[in-house]
Length: 492
Image 1 (cartoon, rainbow, N blue to C red):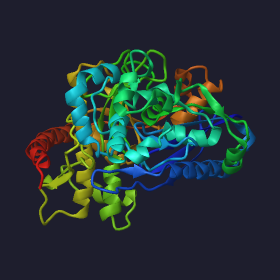
Image 2 (image 1 turned 120 degrees about the vertical axis):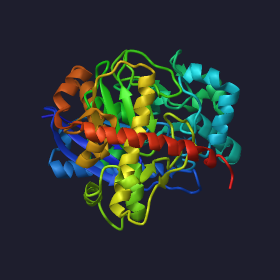
Image 3 (image 1 turned 90 degrees about the vertical axis):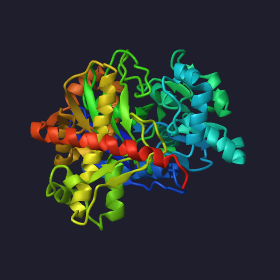
């Protein structure tokens, strides 16, 4: 029996999956690491935490499963895109990585839109926003010029970890699209976009396909990870690309709804759909794309509430509190704009809020309001998607950690008015393991891997009465946004 390892790096933790060639998951493990908020709007992670989590995860997979390291056929990694690691000549990080939810570069993104918006859009297929590497690099250049002058290598999250394992200096084409430094038409790093950032394309990694072999496990990494020296390591891909693959979305019209650190609704298409509302990325299958909407704070909203107000309660306990609370949380509304918002506002100034609460509201009301607020944000995303007329299925695969909550997935199904299928596993680390399997010849095509691994274990079907309640609540949700949005743009 051959086995594949996939490792993901998310907003608050790294998840790893050990996948057998028969499509079953032999073991899983997760390791949390901190996200730091050094100043308002600033969000950072330490790249060394990612590698340390990888070591713990891989060793835990082997220990839990009892699988011999010699049975591992390949390893692949994925991570949230837009997260650059600025390094010196020796690939040592010069500073913490600016995480993609960071909004410090909002004024720079606004300036880029005003001065070069159409040109950037024609190359990158998206308009400047603080999520992208381009404005983040400009912020570093303008605010930390001495640090900027020392940059000799720019890696992205998964590529930094993989470099520690193999010594390579590569990235994949999907990751490159997420930097706003890539010319989608020409298929290369853009001289123009790099010049705006103040860097040479030479400091960026060589771009290859996600399924290409990046290198093999070095002697030092083998000792640390407990894996065989020389084990093949794939280039890998971004986390959403991996989740979309893990969900079985491999054909045009297939659809995913993501309840992870961020929330996304993606549709598989045969071309890009350039729009202010969508982020366009290539699918791992040739000729396909997965344009999608995005809401910045999804499961991270519930984690924030748990860590701030949960008094030690775990997620199942929070679910029980919310389940005992009426639909609509007795008028309590939550807007999940912890780090601004993307679809459909592209407004980094938006702030999260609870509105409409009274003395009778309990902790359960607030938990349910968080879940419902995220669901209503996804309704906003779906409306933007449908306004562009993308051909799509009438049901979707529900992916991300939030899909584990029966209550939350029912809330999202009711709010969207859509049937949602939950897979046995849809974690991006599973998608990475599946990618490793395709590259290693375990499966011939991505569709073969999806048939073997993407098994539906639960389905949430919308209740028409609750869908009607959420439709009315969405009207109030939009009105509150419209009333508060101007206030956040005014200085105190």
